Image 1 (tube, rainbow, N blue to C red):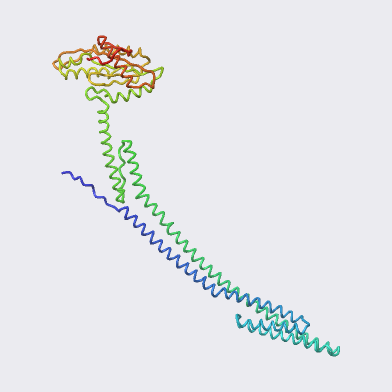
Image 2: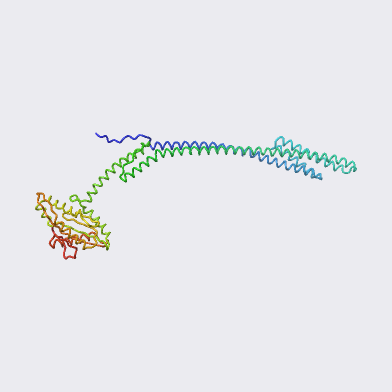
Length: 451
C-alpha cells in the first residue's frame, strides 16, 4: 500500500524565529531605556545639585565681587574727599559693606573687609587731622602735613592692595565654581555620548547579521520558489533546491510548489487533450461547429474590398439512403472519406474545414471574389464525385454532394446571416438536381431541401 502521508518538515518555525527576534528587540529596548533612564536621572540630579548649591555660590561670589568693587570705589572717594561729613558717610558705607561680608563671604574676605574698613577710618582720621592743623605755622604745618599725608597714602595703598587680593579671591572662587559646573556638564555629555554610541553600534552590528540570515534563509528560498513558479508558467523543468530551507513554512511552500508543478504539468497535458476534444469532431477529426463559428467570426472581421470571406456549405446527397441500404458504419466511412478530402484543401488562404452537423460540412476561407468561391465549390463537387468509399461488406461506394456558397467583403456582416445565405444557396443546389454548387440568390419561399 502506498504511503500518501506528507513527509515530515524539519526545521525552525517562522513564528518561533519571529518571536525570538521580537524578544531580542524587546530586551534591547528595555535595556536601552533603563540605561537612558539612569543616565538622565544622573544628569537630573547633577542639575538639581547645581541649582541648589553651585548657582547660589556663583551668585554669592558675584555679590562679593560687586561689594569689593564698591568698597574700592569708596576707599578712593574717602581718600580724595575734603569734606568731613562726606568722609563720615563714606566711612559708614565701607563699614556696612565690611559687615555684609560676614554673611556670605569667606573668612579671608571678612578679615580683609574689616582691615579695609579700619584703614578707611585711618585715612579719614588723617584727613581730619590735617584740617585741624591747618592753622599751625607754615613751616611746622608743612612738616606735619607731609608726615600725615604720607600716613594717609600708606593706609590708602594698603587698602587698595587688600581689595585687589579680595577681588582675585572672589574671581578665583567664581572660576572654580564655573569650572565645576562645566566639568559636570562635560561628564554628563560624555556619558550620553557613550550611551548613544553603544545604542547605535549594537543595532549596526545586529542588522548586517540579520540581513545575512534573511538572505540565506528567506530571500534565497523565496527566490527559488518564484523561479520555479516562472518555470511552471513556461512549462519548464523545475529547479532543484540547493538545500532544504531551515524555516518550516518556506520548506512547506517549496514542497507545495514542486507538487503544484507536477500537477500543473499533468493538467496542461490533460487540457491539451480536452481542448482537442472540445475543438475537433470525434468522428472525422475536423474542427467542430463551435470551433468553426469562432473562426468564421474572426474571418469576417478580416474582410475587406480586396479579400472577402467565403463560406461553402456542403451536404452529401441522399445520405439517408446510404445509411438505410449499407448501414450507419458505412455512412460513417463516407463522412470520414469526405473529411479526408476537405482536410487537405490546396491553394486556399486561411482556410478551415469543419463538420457542421450530420452529413453537412462547411469550408470557410479568404477569397478574392464570389466568383472564385463559386468556382472552387464546383471543383469540390467534382472531387467528391470521384471519391471511392468501401462499405462494410466490401462494396465500393460513390456519392455526390451539393454546395451552397455565400460571400462577404464587409467586416460588419453577421456570421449567422452569412450561414443563412449559404444555406439558401445549398437549398437552391438541391432543388436544381443536386451534385452542383450554387451562390446565394434571393429566393421565394423558404425551407430546407431534404437529403
